[in-house]
Image 1: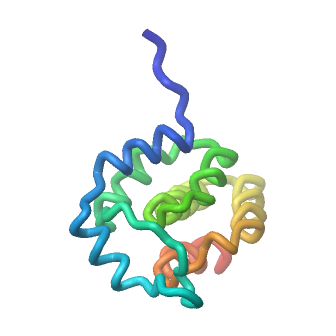
Image 2: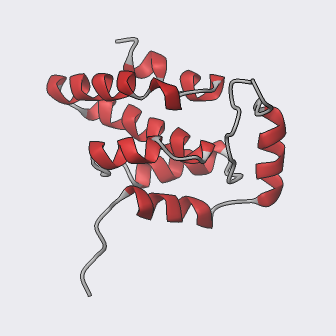
Length: 128
């Protein structure tokens, strides 16, 4: 059997397998998701940051195109994972790759809609 291609869907499926309803409920109360608030409409899988960092490291081989698709997810943790992947790619990338990541990030700022998403990525990608 051939291995599956690494896609945003594969990563999202892995994230869903790590989900916790209890943690999703807690996150939805912590992040401002009410009408008119910065996280309005966000959905949560309930995955804690150590697991998200582990998954990002596992899936850092995701292409930039697929990472951009993951960044557009309705799930907060999927977007957070995409940003963590972008940070890893940026740190390991050459100047051309870094420039592509900065462009991708700036084109997708609408999906970086929470303080935690900004805090884990902006200074590491846009700062340099």
